[in-house]
Length: 190
Image 1 (cartoon, rainbow, N blue to C red):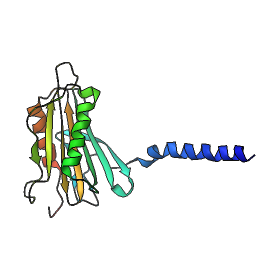
Image 2 (cartoon, rainbow, N blue to C red):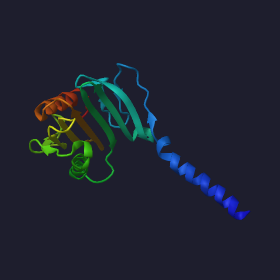
Image 3 (cartoon, rainbow, N blue to C red):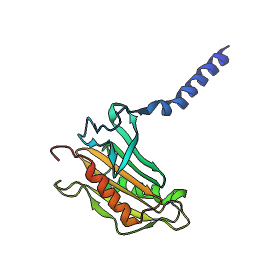
């Protein structure tokens, strides 16, 4: 009897543990065409970035401590993803190196080559630089022509932008990221 009761409790605990990650994510409901302001950082995310409409918005941790937005076209495929999350430890170079490594080891980006040197990145008018950006070109055998990442810190929050395109050159992707970045509304004061 003890073991059957113990087994039932263990099974219930395992099921609850296995279900936890999917329950942790929550869709952020935003009206189509509306901007959304992050309640902690003050960053405003518009309804489109770089001419690409927002698809989904997801809360990965309660109280908007880790959120993501997807802006995606279907054909030709282009995507800009935006993440805002707490700056709890490490600094931009540490998390930027991890973001770059994630690109370099993914199968879909096999053969990614840094198109030009990594560069400082952030909002004009901020004190000093805030972050870094890297753009990659991919070999002709890939379905993706270019991909890139920018990561910066502002007012205790990390902001990461990822972009990929089937058709854009690395230079064109950099321009798309610049346009998307310029459309974000920074917190005031910066």
